[in-house]
Length: 496
Image 1 (cartoon, rainbow, N blue to C red):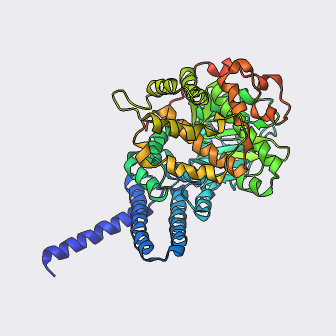
Image 2: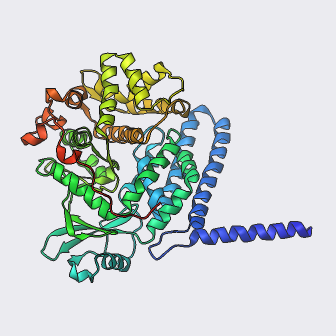
Image 3: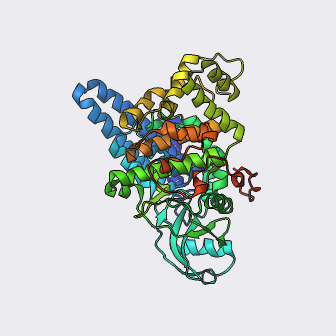
């Protein structure tokens, strides 16, 4: 062998071995934190996925027509299973992406969604001695000085931290959320690898807008890393919904809050998948209307949105109540923006094409100087607004969700500009659509939408419209000034 070729071969082997070893390096909590290690791990997943995709295309060309769907489904299941295993180990941004994708129903077969769906509830947990170190370091005293008892096995392990059942010194049942050591460094490095993140999303979710999804993650994750910010958010939502008979937000325990620790009232109930398996049609209907009112009243009446609407953040109780968890990612909307977004739907309801075009320009959906394709935009937003446009019952079914595959094609999205606030609305739409479809949601959503479009009518919320008795303050369609007040200054969080 020529000397230069031998040298090149040896160097290539050495580099490959170094990358392999770096990809296996983890901190005490089992998390890869270095940029090199995380890039190597994700790069390996993406390259394997792309190779499989090329092989898939070749197999589909040679396969009989009746076998093609089966072959493609097997490809998605294998890719999703491998991605779920890696995302669960890496946690942080990658696990959050898996959670988001896992409950969209437009491009993945059921088995593939189930593989990713495990990320909604559990990830590999960290050892308890690390939990103890984090709690004691954050709260500044031995564990026994804060808690009477804490279970060593976590109730759940998620993308940024895990939750333990505990008992406060005064006997209160506690859900103690503890952040993984090093996850902040891992997330910073993930976000430096933004193009790779977008490629990863596109590799197993063909109808996503991966660039917009990464931009949203980048904008929101800084707040999620500081549990003091999350505690402030959760206090606000608890204040807004305290006393509601169905919608529940756990109370924060102020003496158990630090940058990496958050103690709150323990909520126990069924996870989403277990609820779907056990609930009656009426129970699912009640849950769907509770989720609807929590999201849309919070947003339109109070100007706040809990921006992580995946099923792992809901617990369902035997009395019909729903607990809403995880307030690390909260968006505060400007009232003028919300008014203009509602105006788009009102323009479609009224058939006011000129007003629609005016609002498209005002919201910067089409940038100044760019051509405005009115027919495309009217149809595009018509899909999103279909549940509210007509005074009739609307069903969130598979046919409606499958239509998203056409609406969200990249060639269509290229005609749009999506300002950050509208990226949140995109997430609201597709996240809730999938949840409502799973619950079999069916109602006259137009009449509920009038609550937000025409507050002078004082239309009742969805729960009241199906017969749930609510205290007067939850019936009002008037904005609550407590949420309209300026947001508190955020506690210092690590810059990303």
